[in-house]
Image 1 (cartoon, rainbow, N blue to C red):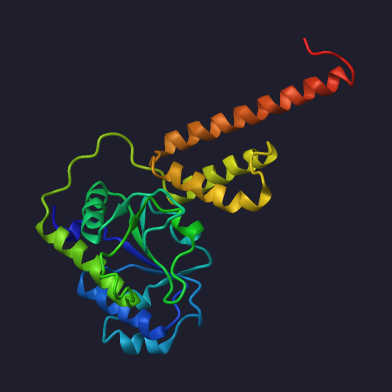
Image 2 (cartoon, one colour):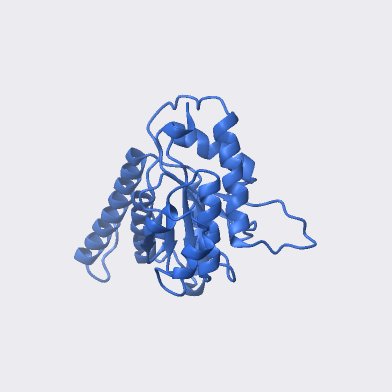
Length: 261
């Protein structure tokens, strides 16, 4: 399959700080055939003239860049998203090299799926809660003696591996079965489940709620549920919550001091 027939991965920058780095990202995207840039809460707002100056003529990713207020919104329409970051200790997600990630992204693109690569800001990187919305982690095998890597360099390494895969790989294999659900459907399921678990008193002690939520999301995300599977599991959650309500209603009717049947 020709590269031009595929939808290339979306590049998502979470809280980028410097206009110069955003421009440099656009430049390497253009070098390797990536076109769609999304940004979540750029520190200094948008647009920024210095970004265009640093793009060295690679204006099209900047001209068409889309802004979002959260990572969840930025990936809502994507079927497969990888977080580019150091290995997260808190989450049990698959960890891929850029080359392995490019292979999976290529396969997904060949199936007509929209994909993305998520990058953190220059100073703080990615929050665990945002990584938990992704299906895998891409870790660049840099020398531990010096781990500092510029944002544009990180994008360039992943974009290069995509480009190499797109030029050299055989046509993606035909996918059997339905495609995975997109980010919006998954987030809706996660939030539905979490509301009912909270109502049932599952999140205890309260201070551990964020880490428990992140672990649940990363575990469920690894399954790569289809839309139908998401609907099925949401139906399961609804049935369980209604069943709990019926039990409580029955107990209330019995009144204090009455024995259960």
